[in-house]
Length: 239
Image (cartoon, one colour):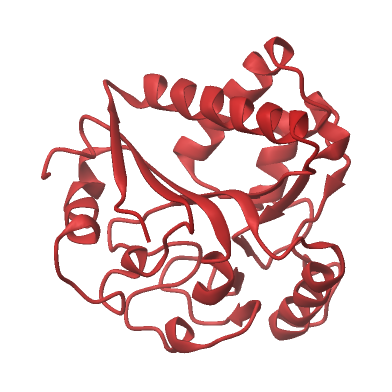
């Protein structure tokens, strides 16, 4: 795997604009080459800012959003109309505005009786509609180094599957659906989006020369062609 690249912006707003512009450029290039790009979205504050910037900047790019396939790295297993849903935020921020139609949300409590059934259903959907890899996978990183809903020391870090149900997330709500490390690693490009000084230690640990992904799960994912850490100055403070 190529070495990770680090790009540092002055603040969270500049970071969001840079990521949105790069994503739109990649999608336009992929479609110009005749591909139907598949992307993985994440949740969190910086992701929401990126999504709003995508909506703002999208008219400047030649992208057919009906030919972009959208997935999520993880989701809270709550009601479909819950404010906790990553998918609800993404739809409100940009997906509905740009006309994305191939959007595969992770199941909500409205759709499945339990979180394991929901994860099994999402795995089946990815087998049917997935391309076998993401063009771009975006991931947030928690202060503890977690990615998606894969937390330090959790048994899910060692499971080879597509999606899993999590019932004991240390962050509420406790029930979540997450893609696994093997699935997340099926990506041409992995982008970590990190903002804020509270996450600086985790960023430094993830990028250190040595370390264990069981302690810092962000160390366990990299792109086949590239891995980029998009940081603001605060998140890069310990590098």
